[in-house]
Length: 389
Ligand SMILES: Nc1nc2c(ncn2[C@@H]2O[C@H](COP(=O)(O)OP(=O)(O)OP(=O)(O)O)[C@@H](O)[C@H]2O)c(=O)[nH]1
Ligand SMILES: C[S@@+](CC[C@H](N)C(=O)[O-])C[C@H]1O[C@@H](n2cnc3c(N)ncnc32)[C@H](O)[C@@H]1O
Ligand code: SF4
Ligand code: SF4
Image (cartoon, rainbow, N blue to C red):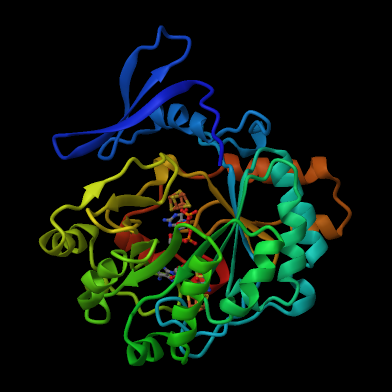
């Protein structure tokens, strides 16, 4: 994706006193180089500057997508369905979740209309998620229509990969640019335990199909849980030696109905200790300031490794994400319970301007960061399967 560095040029990361820091030369200030963010003090006074790198010149970000901390929201996650063909323990309760009746879910044309509104305001990346987005029957048509939106630079999907191998060639033709596939274990029996369903071989096949079709990197999302799959961290890293994949270890997050407790959380620092011992050449890469992941390379590996540290080192100061849920609710933060319906005004005949006002007001109410770890666990929120990650 092409980036326009409208205010900051020549961004790079440095490393000092155990902190990575982002340095940028600012246009219009005599190219003065200064530290604009560190991992320990990624403060909000600097986040606006860091965010300028997320603007594209041909699709500038309108006020509707800028929050009260100056964060530019250029990434929209759309949940296409609340249903899924797996039942992952970390995502949903064993008894399943309450499903919104079909007529109350967004139709294809409603999704495209709302997405068009966001893209015309400056969103340049859309991720389809769910539930499992690939089980939606009209997914190809949705991809085709979204990928045609002027100003959209990247159409991505997060999927469990169960039915992906068969569907991917067509989805690629319909404009799907990037792929994240979830896989938490390399052991088939454990997969069945974790997901309460069979299908490990199908997910592995989907990863290989995605590589064959030229997706690079194929991102592999692995939620790490103590006593369940933390013994497989180095095996996942080993996979990146020969496969052009980016394995992303995700800290286990609490949501309604999942099996989270603090003892099951494996903190980033602990995961990293394991990896460094076995792969001492691991090196931090330059991260984009709005990314969820901290990214690393290892000598001799054609893939890479990342960590998504929502629980122990949040990345809220660089947040550029908004969420449209399958029932048409708009959610400005993954961990925030606050939601507003876009479906209802849309169905009552609201014009684009009225919808923009509702969206803009919700964005302005977005908080600086999420609550502390244990507070998140106590906050009322939906199950993850409704939110889509
Ligand atoms: N705390 C937090 N976690 C997020 C956010 N967005 C995604 N995640 C988590 O990151 C993990 C991977 O999510 P993905 O669906 O692959 O999305 P992504 O990390 O934005 O993917 P890329 O666009 O490829 O970087 C999941 O556990 C998500 O719940 C966010 O805005 N905040
Ligand atoms: C909710 S799923 C939806 C998309 C698709 N069904 C899938 O599994 O990839 C999106 C992402 O959220 C991650 N996820 C779900 N529950 C989580 C939790 N409790 N903590 C961290 N990540 C979680 C999944 O592993 C997946 O990568
Ligand atoms: S993580 Fe994805 S595959 Fe697993 S239950 Fe949730 S929505 Fe389904
Ligand atoms: S927790 Fe909320 S504010 Fe923080 S990165 Fe995620 S969506 Fe953004």
